[in-house]
Amino acid sequence: MISVSKRSAVEPFHAMDLLGAATRRRQTGKPVISMAVGQPSHPAPQRALEAARQALAHGRIGYTDALGLIELRQGLSDYYSTRHGVTIDPGRILVTTGSSAGFNLAFLGLFDPGDVVAIARPGYPAYRNILNALGLRVLEVGVDAESHFTLTPESLEAAQRAAGCKLSGVLLASPANPTGTVTGRAQLKALMDYCGTQDITLISDEIYHGLTYSGDESSALEIGDEVIVINSFSKYYCMTGWRIGWMVVPDHLVRPLECLTQSLYISAPELSQIAAIAALGATDELDGYKASCRANRDFLQKRLQDLGMPLLSPMDGAFYAYADVSAFTNDSMDFAYKMLAEIDVAATPGRDFDPVDGHRAMRFSYAGSRADMVEATDRIAAWLAK
Image (cartoon, rainbow, N blue to C red; front, top):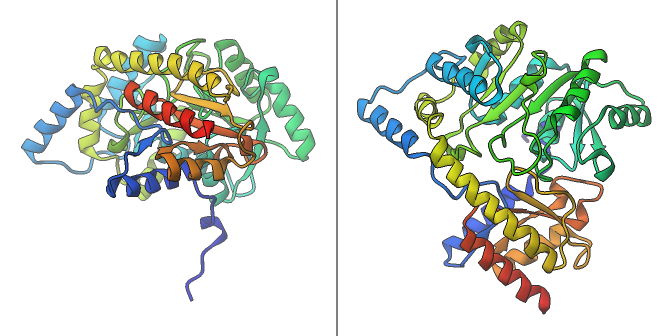
């Protein structure tokens, strides 16, 4: 009998399970609206699509250097100069198969089995699952209004004392999933200074950069070089299915991570890299998508409040509302599946993001169209009234 290793027995990500269930219902003709995943309704930028068409017409798509096309890495260097005012050597940039590959490379290249890595709770469940699968220990640190919904030196110190452990790494997301929290420059600097003095590796997840509506969208690279920054073309650039991302690392990590890339992925898809080069020049089009997200945000934060689902954190960035549904259920998982089965609206149970308090929370994505937001919340209102 073939057995399953403990490392592969990770927890399910119910947002993706719900997406699968919603897709199957839609295929049977059901009028499903999905607010379960961070899937932009906007297509990839027209410049990216045209660049991909031309590349396909040429017909020569193959492997690239493991680090990625130099044209894309230079374009990303220019991005940091223009958007964040910092000079980043293209040689420090690795193009990855989505941000997920970046996290895999970082965790494998930086930590040994048994090392402890801190993440925020609530937080993106794939962090926890990947770390566990690689034999690392996860320290989930609760965030709330007192900590401004982000990790702080004080909360990390308290969590280590309570757990009796010493951190090897900290993973911070800003804007964060599912809370939408934006960690401002002053808080980010305090965290980086703390990690530097404690010999803790900081990984900064910046995949929702470009989708900030309030607060200070700072890159960790504005503060120092001894940090690993991971970003992606999936969210602001509306290229989820292209599976293309990047990471910026200190010089001494480039070669070890390049060797890992060669063995694990060979290289990111060349077609996606070509499209990504063009996407970097599509700011005007993409800022139009950001404006639609902002309008959805303004609509949804009021609508959820009216429905009796107050926000558990401010909606500063990304495209998620993290809401309290304890007035209606103490089992967000059951609530999510009933909502899909009974009114064809998919949203994600908080249990994905917070194994302690997530039973009373739901995450609603507002990455879709305004019409879908209105129709979905109208259905929810009628459903709850029953």
